[in-house]
Amino acid sequence: MEQHTDKLAADFILTGASRLVTAAPGTHPSADGALGVITRGALAAHAGRIVWIGPENQLAAHVALDGLPKDAWLDAGGRAVLPGFVDSHTHFVFAGDRAEEFQLRHAGVSYEELAARGGGILNTVRATRSASAHKLEVIAREHLRGFLIHGTTTVEGKTGYGLDLETEARCLDVMHTLATAPADMPRIVPTFLGAHTIPPEYRDTPDGRARYVDLVCEEMLPDFAGRARFCDVFCERTAFTVPETRRILERARDLGYQLKLHANQLGPSGGAGLAAALGATSADHLDFASDDEMDALARAGVVGTLLPGCSFSLSIPYPAARRLYAAGVPVALATDFNPGTSYSENMQMMIALAVSAMGMTLDQALVAATHGGARALAMEDEVGSLEVGKRCDLIVLSTADERHLAYHFGVNLVARTVVGGVPCAP
Ligand code: NIG
Ligand code: FE
Image (cartoon, rainbow, N blue to C red; front, side):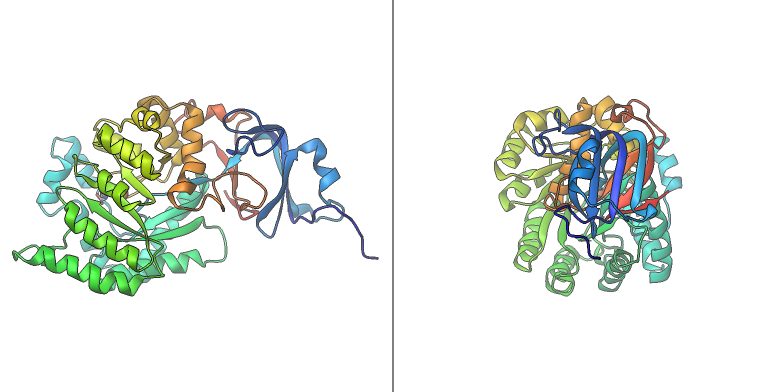
């Protein structure tokens, strides 16, 4: 006989969480502190979305539990549970590696010097252009697995190692193929970064730069509209100027893209001011952003995305996180996973660097790595916190207390990653 009940239907139940970190303070009466922690919390989901969250001793009163199959239950075993990390800035589609360049850099050759010699981004462009879609997919899948086992449930991915119509399209195709793969994948948000650097074949003639910007604006952007959610530009003295960046991003905006910028990474490029003027979703790096630029970002509501893996890998100073907070800029933390300046899929490492090298509190770092990342992707209604109605994307740590993150560093503290109510790693 059909059971009539007012209780919520669920197909995924999480119990046994010592501390359920919602990253959504104030959304639940039992959620404490800046991270909105529910002690001995539980959660129920249906069709991939959270339908109930609260103290475990109230679960049975609200959720229909009878007859649920055993595999619908996940017991956190007295460990801490957090929203999955939202890594809002990565370059995970490429071929080859730059281990040799890494050694040269640490022997004293600068990143910009390597780029001037045809290394750096162009090194990876050569390898990526000669790789088939299948090969790129196999490599990218491996990296996505790396993101997942370290707790990332949503990952943005940029093109930018193709720099021609065909290879940029191939990299986007790879992201789309992987985004529709059946399971065991983080969510993928594709970004078009055709303006990553001027490709080699446009470097020898005086009008080459302008012709490449034309190609980006008149062929690539219209072709990829609807297939990449964001358009990003590397606005830097070694890459694209402020006027070039403005032209590309205004065209992108007209075509329906949302906007991001690599801004003020290697010098005071003016990118941060432009991000504010254009109302970009995020301005990323910001190592050289002035106080005025930070104020402008805050006024425009642009998310400042900090990428400490770059500073670590390049052995350069870290961005001024505390000044960003003081200015009132919403902050996101991301890996910038790429083969040149930050070869790490591990958001836990970024949290450790944020706390130990950038003076962020653990609460700030955890919010920046989850809710902040979601804001940087304009996905805060979907992911980044554990709340009713949002995607059931979460991680179970191997410890009872989330404060082991940053403190116990250089190891993987994620025991289980759940995407859309499906446990998929390890
Ligand atoms: O975010 N800054 C530009 N792009 C990447 C580096 C890419 C590379 O070196 O391959 C970054 O750091
Ligand atoms: Fe980047």
